[in-house]
Image (cartoon, rainbow, N blue to C red):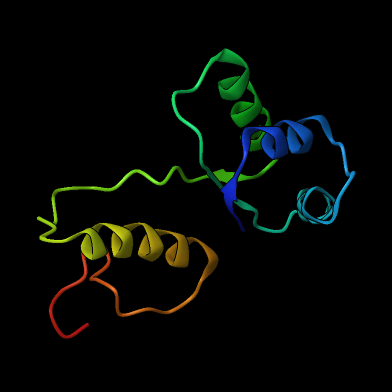
Length: 108
């Protein structure tokens, strides 16, 4: 997981450049078909950013923008942060009690 991921790092990953530990680890994950979750940090996005996200996705990465959902009716900033952290944890297989997973019943 790369969280947060700058668009410079995303571009390096999309281009296969491994000039530091983060981009090298990301490229190894993609090469070995391991899960790579990328949480981009910049907005707004321009066309090159979007194309780099597509390239990373086609290579096997999961792009998970830190965009909160509001259907769970958050009442604090912590609720919004927990929503994003829960989504990331779900993607990388880390158990959490931050909130119920989609479709999960009480007591599950």
